[in-house]
Image 1 (cartoon, helix red, strand yellow):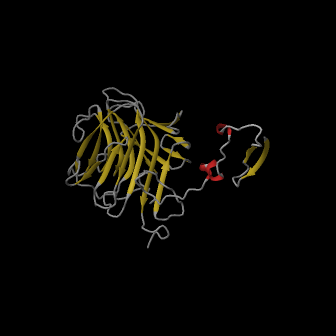
Image 2 (cartoon, helix red, strand yellow):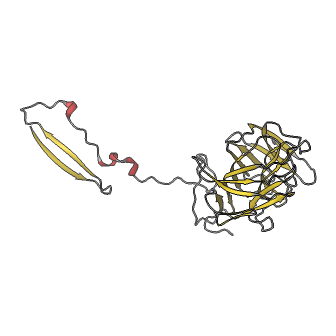
Image 3 (cartoon, rainbow, N blue to C red):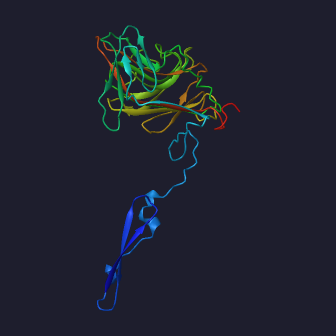
Length: 317
């Protein structure tokens, strides 16, 4: 029996593979189990083979993945993972997005980045001052008067999606709203989102132990709420609002990947006539305790995507 070492170089970078050829001269039998199986080159490292990219639409697909192409003018993206920024009582600047903090009543907020742990790798905490009931703070991208607004309710042929990852710091005696609203300081004016509002005079009545979806109109026309079935706690939750871009004045809400609930004037889970007013992303909280105290919420992620054109090469066809 003779042994020969052959060195093969496959075109896969600086990776060398060796094969040992054992030739039986008849002196010694070589059992089959000792005969090495040499795979062909393509099967050695299948992870290195190129894979054709799947066709995606920059917004949503059945697999749930989103692709990002900065040269595609049909899509507008915004996001913030709250990893860095310059913090002040009224703003977050020099991060991915500029955020403005407003007072509800009289409350000087304090902002602080928190220690992160997988999977929440960037956390911004917004804490109110030590305030009486009805006072607190709200946060929105840019200043409330800057124009980060859109008539989200009028969404025929306007598909868009917003996502927040958030948590509250307390589970009682608070007014917490998150979503798209027409006012920073008066959330109940117009809009839709998720809330935990324990006030006896709250629209749709006081919330108990669960988060509820909400849709409000400033004129008092068809305010609506829907129990999510998800208990209010101090863990992080993921909230999504989206339109399907096909039916005007209809949106979908979901929490933690649960069943989507629809909002529209008729035949939806929340029966409410959608506002045609301009709305903006808002998160707000007030103390509703009988004694003064500070309350807070935290944001781990904010993102939005909207398809504004049917052509990736022409935004204004």
